[in-house]
Image: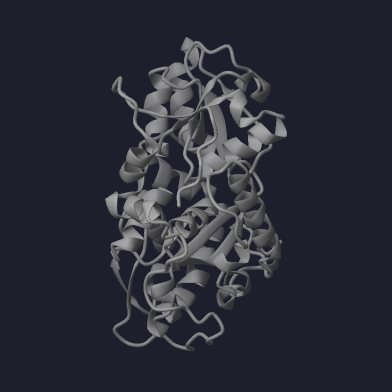
Length: 364
C-alpha cells in the first residue's frame, strides 16, 4: 500500500490541472510499478531468492556478461583512463547512460540493467516498491554532494528562509533526502513548506522558470546555473548536510546468478581504483571528462572537483548501514515509506572487496 503523503506536498505539472500521486508514481516509476504499489506488493521480490550466505565464486565463468550503468559515460571513461577497463574478466554487454534512481529501478525491472551506481535512497525506494535489490559496494561521501540553489530574484539566504516556500523534491532520489535532512536540522516541519514532486532532471527547468523557490542541485550543475542566473539574483545556500553513501547495487536475481555475482565481485575493485585514480589525477579528469564530454570550462570543472569528496571505502559497512537506517526512519516519519530494517539492503559478502583494492588512506 502506498504511504500517505504529508500535507503540503504538491506534485509539479506545467499544466493547470492537478497531477495526483497515483499519476505521479506512474510517470516516475512506470505503470507496472505504480500498479504494484496500489496492490500492496511492497513485500514481493522479483527473480530467484538470494542466498546471501552462499560464498562467491573464485573466478568468473567464461561467457559471463553484465550491463553496467555509466551515466554520461562517466564510469566507462574513468575505468579507461585509470587503466582498469582491460582488466575486466567478463563482457560488458552495454553501458547504458542511466543515473537517476527511478530510471535505474525501471531498468532493473526491465532486465536491461544489472549493476548501477547511485546514492543510498534508490535501494530504499526499490524496497518500498517491492523490488528486491542489494548494495554490493560502498564509498563514503564526507562533503555535501548537493547545494541548494534559489530561483532568480529570490530573497532566500538561509535554510530557515525555506518556510512557506516551494521546494523541489524527489522522494526516490538522493536530493530528496538531503532536503528532508536540511529541513530537520533547521527545525522546519513538512507543513512549514510546500514540497513539489519532481524528478531531478526537472529541477533546473522548474527553478529557472520560478515554479519552485529552491532546488538541491548536484555540484556539477551549480557553476553553469550561477553563470547564467547569478546576475538575476539567483544564489546558492550552503549547508553541512551530506549524502553519505555512494554505492553500487544490483537486483537480487542478478546476485543469485553465481556467474554474474562473481563478475560483480571482480568489477568492484576496478570501480574503487577508478575513483581513486580520478581523485589523484584531477587535472586529467577535469579536462577529459568535464571539459571534453560535459562542455564545461576548465575553471568550472576545477570548481566542481574542489567540492568533491575523497573516496573512502570502509572495511566495515556498519556506519553505512546505520546511515541508511536513519534515512529509512526519516522517510517513514514523513509517511513516504513503511519502516523496515536497512541491513536487509546490503549483501555483506561483498563488504571487503573495495577496501581491499585501495591503499590505506582510502579506507577511512
